[in-house]
Image 1 (cartoon, rainbow, N blue to C red):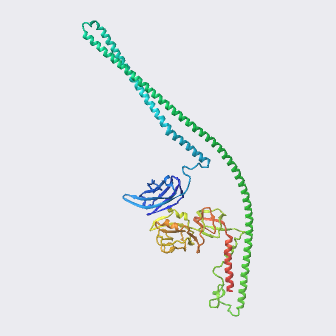
Image 2 (image 1 turned 90 degrees about the horizontal axis):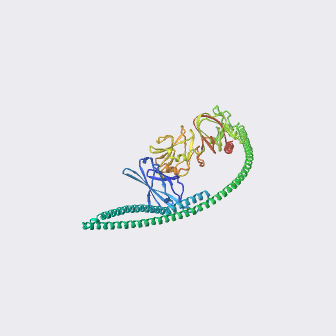
Image 3 (image 1 turned 30 degrees about the vertical axis):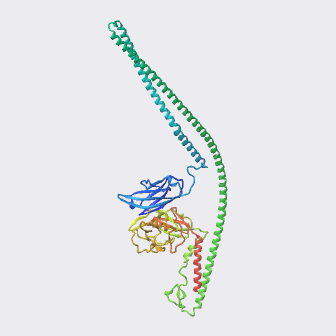
Length: 604
């Protein structure tokens, strides 16, 4: 099941992170509660309140995961969760987290969907459940009751028959006794005269025996009648059971007819679907073929346009360089004429200590030895380096042995000229050196070191670094700064607060460390608050901040625009080339040439 949100505990504060939208009629989705490590030995207890304003206990497992039941998604609106931590007699309440349930439609009573596999599955399930429900509700109990009646009546018949048999045996014994008594009476007839009283007594005994036999016969007839009635009742019950069974069979036959009709419709729909898929595949093949033709044409047009632009760029560069050369030559000639004009006024021998200098006008209007060129101009070697990468030579050589920041790069890759020597991990990073995704995982932070949470950040060593980002106001109850130390202690060599509780965000420059790691320090337990405010933080090489660019990296020696940071961990030598952004180079060269022209004309 999907985890739709994580509830993060930091001290007594709860925040809802990694939240995915939830909608009505969902069910069995998961939320994970992540405890603050300081409360790892506490038991977490949670409750939720649904739309009926009823409160229920959450079943939270050892990983902090609990499942949201169907009742939570019955309506759109807000569902509240409350949590507390318990340890021995201590109980800490953490407050309430709210989850929004958005509107949706399509509950259990919705009509069948359009997709064949889905509605076939739904219909099959409904039919099976309905048949099972009817059987369990109407027929199975009645059949079981009839079978129980039959079993009971059968036992009663067996018992009655056994009783009839016992009574018949007893009656037979009584009759036999009566016959024996009659024999005794007959034997005693000869002595009747002598023992009249005794004969009369025997006759009375015989009469009683006769009456007893008659009574036994009546009891046997009664038992027979009851047995016949029981048999009749059992027969009626069996008939009722047979009638119920026949009705159940008729109902099952109707269901089988419906299922057979469904299977026929299903086979027809499958055949129609296969035909539609075949037609769609044919149409798709036609569109793909047309798209490939269009793409080839566009690539051909793009290549032609690129060749034209490269030729135009080369011509532009050549013209600009020629113009700059003419302007410099004119400036030199003007300077020579000025020297000749001043020969009569100046002492030509200005001393060996002024060798190589030119004559300039100082602040008081006097001509003195000095430099007529501004400080921010290219040397001849720099100009040659810039000009060697004209558009007809787009690749620039470089030998990578350590960390380096390469300006004017394009989105492409380094091309290896020779095999890579040595063993090292080489990673390329774009302009922004701050990886927000990396910082968002608390596992990458060292927590609570002398009151600070500390994040190590890999940067190219020995470069000036500058920060920029969104403006964040004061009074958020935390501080953040960069340091060269990993122990959270004050770093007097690097005064670079990123956030001061009194003034808010502070952006500036600082010199990077010699061991290529800079440490971001944030007040303990406030890291999540800091990250919410500094999502657009940028850390880059240079003295002037530029427009924000998300963090990019590659282990495949990719290059990025407008610059690429190469980070080398280990010893290696990579002889390669990279594509330089010639338009950016030309723009920088134009600015330098203009500065040179203005300074030369001003000082001649």
